[in-house]
Image (tube, rainbow, N blue to C red):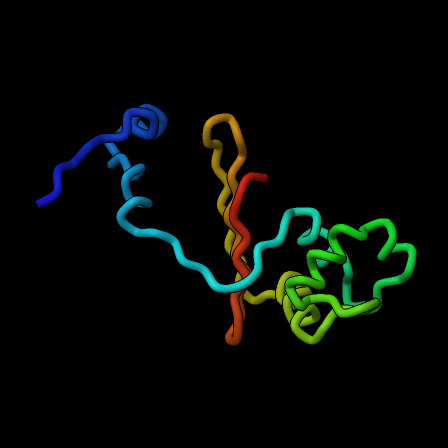
Length: 127
């Protein structure tokens, strides 16, 4: 039997006792498959529109982002890979998107999910 431990901060915010969930992470470790990308790389990828080609000037200006996207197999040379195009299209034309933002220790935290029948893209972290 579990004991209800109220979270004082959320209880104050919402006016009702809510459980303290800070201990959940230690009992439910997060395992992932896939690539970690920083926010600038995600912005660069999502800003590509439908054009898979990355021009020489863009490769120079966004060299760090392109390198990270290459490591994640989303870019090959001067263009988006099929996988990169699929992720780009999902962010652009997803039939389902879900976004949550919160403030934690003075930082904005973000969770955003795009999904279709074949794949899901999850972005989480400090904004």
